[in-house]
Image 1 (cartoon, rainbow, N blue to C red):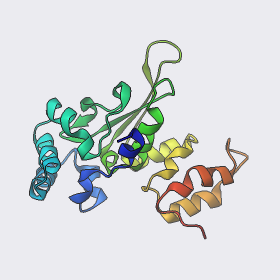
Image 2 (tube, rainbow, N blue to C red):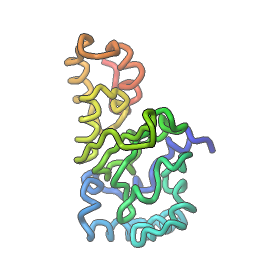
Image 3 (cartoon, one colour):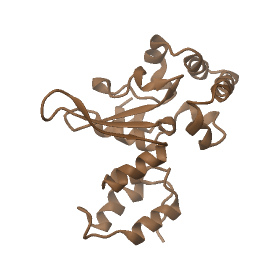
Image 4 (tube, rainbow, N blue to C red):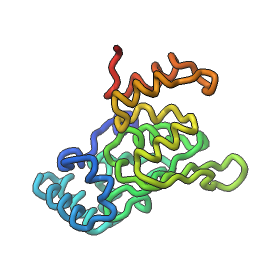
Length: 201
């Protein structure tokens, strides 16, 4: 399976999460983590049981063996690794400059995967001026982080289903080509049209 196909593979969490709010609080609520692990166990598949075990005990062998069956791609150059997880859930996303081969695939996964909804820290890494380092760090809820990126004119985030149809319409209505590097038509075609909540009116 190609990296493009793996990026689009749904997270196994989609089968057990009752609301997106659960993922926003999962890193602080022990009982919720235990409940999600039990729901995964109850599914009874090899993938769900191994993910439940990962939540209970964040084991690197389990992670490396089963991550793709959970919907977590194994990007080249260690773009998403076990250290980015806490208590079995993604807490940090490390975006990378184009110096890394899979950076665009990893970014798309971050914007579209249910796995990313538990992220509370975003780092942008580059190595253009020497050793690799995190140049930008944002903290907050997943949506707050994407809103910060959008405020910095990172239009790619508009593919994320975290933005509702109403928010997309409002963004289009308020878009000013004088303040952006792109035309509105380009932003709609390249990003907004790929958001599952967007519909042409």
